Image 1 (cartoon, rainbow, N blue to C red):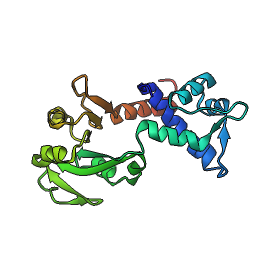
Image 2: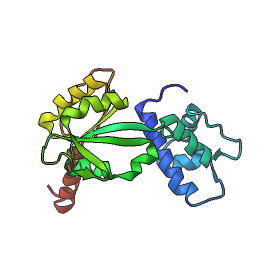
Image 3: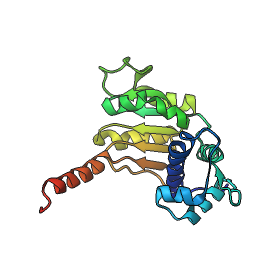
Image 4: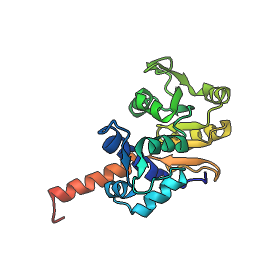
Length: 214
């Protein structure tokens, strides 16, 4: 299979949820669906749907369509959901704690195996079975468990320093929930979740509703 770009991965995730919710959950008899049905649900061109299906090895049946369960299985295989990949999470505040406690990540293969924080008052406390560890243990845990994914829910002023430590220890993929714009080498993949940017957008549109002339 050829490498997938970010846009293709995002579309595959939309297909995954759409098929699960609109086809499989509503029909237990191994439903089939056409590219035009899927395109209509997601406001896409059906030729794009067919290209994406071909890219992950799904072959449609002429005048029948795609097997919904096969599509879901192929997406899971293509995106790596069938594998288990451990991760470390830095920042045991409310957001970090919520992420550590979320059991739904297991569906996608994500396994948060260690939780770290700089606050000595939190060390030794447990969040959903995760014992909060001191940052001094960060590098040994990463290397001992061959971890490649790091999740950041730390303040912006410490985010870059911790990012540098993670990369030096062997982390190659980062999921950043901090407001900091991080600098990483070209070979490191980073996904930014800009919660404050989203909040700003929401606030703006609420303001427009309340003050349409402003």
